[in-house]
Length: 247
Image 1 (cartoon, helix red, strand yellow):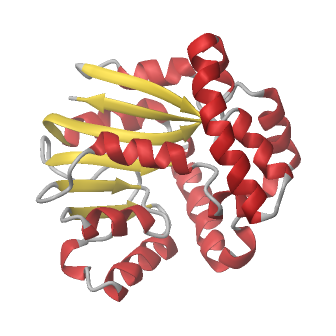
Image 2 (cartoon, rainbow, N blue to C red):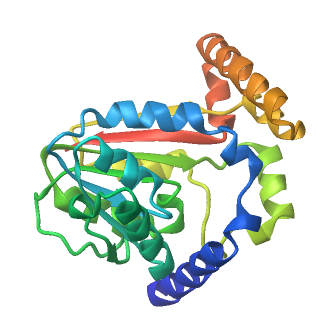
């Protein structure tokens, strides 16, 4: 039931805001997903003067990034507390006039057809009902507009074991994505791509000391690029993927 799903996601992410100091992981703070996020931002392209939807804005980091670069940003989240945090962050950086925050569900976007230049989201699609959300994103994008997402994949057995052992880190309704879902999501678009990140870099989580952690991530990123060139079949075992679609 979609309403039950939304209620669970809202409850969970409201609590994430309340528990922010204890919920955050050092592996996020120290840049384990940094390569993927930088790659995704580059895929999105120049921000100046564009109308961009921050899809599932969370605590507002990407809203701030885009607004600082001249975009008119429309952030939304299913969690009212997340939406409030994003608005507060924008106001603290005197960017309130460039940011219009809404509480909303991703499966039912309150924007006109063909109205947005771009859509951007990090770790959000896997919380949603993919059958509904794909058509909504396609509907609101202008012809030639693009959507870029960073999402977890469901193929690495060690990651799936970690997920099973740490259920408190995730909502009850979220699921990592599989390639069949990404193919279905991408089908209406005239161009799409999937780029995977995070294989040997995951070894960094075993070393919770920032200098060592960051060194392993840096070296692992180089190793991963080489491995994927030699053994492309290893890509499916990565932690996350950057998905780009162009209408």
